[in-house]
Image (tube, rainbow, N blue to C red):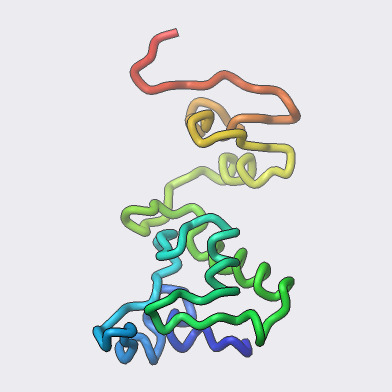
Length: 147
């Protein structure tokens, strides 16, 4: 890859590349590259945030702008690739979530749309796992709330 992301972020996105221990911020203090597997990013965790970081870089850090070296499509592709490292992981621990193959398939379905995080369903109680399936709004479960 021409961006050489692996030099800082490592081959598996854990922030453990060969240059990771040598990085310094603008104040010459040590700084660690993002561990993509945790899903927590300095500039925000949405794909548009990752794209913005790829485009503008991160001021005060060694993360450069790639606006001159990559086109828009390449930066979008890498942004989605970066997010793929944290797919199905707990953002606090980085541990992979224990989801059944059926739940993963339902969540990956192109027919499923989540309107808002609070509408997410419990995958153990609803196979679809998120808010809309085939345009229908299934039942929403709120912990501690009786029907």
